[in-house]
Image (cartoon, rainbow, N blue to C red; front, side, top):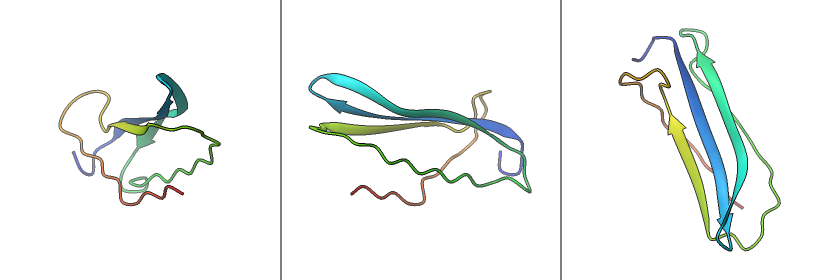
Length: 75
C-alpha cells in the first residue's frame, strides 16, 4: 500500500476515574508522492490519568495499509 492513496484515521483519548475523555479524532488523506507524512501536536490539561490510548486505522477502506508512530512526547 506504500505509494498509494489512502485515508487514515487516528483517535486519541485519555481515561480517568472510569471515564473516557476524547482528545482528538481526525482523518487524513494521503496522496503520494507529495503527502506521505502527517504531524500533529496537542496540548491537553489532564488530571488523574489512568491510561492514554492511541488508535490508528491506516486504511479506512481496508486493504493492507500500514502506519507508524515515529515519536511521542508525554510530559
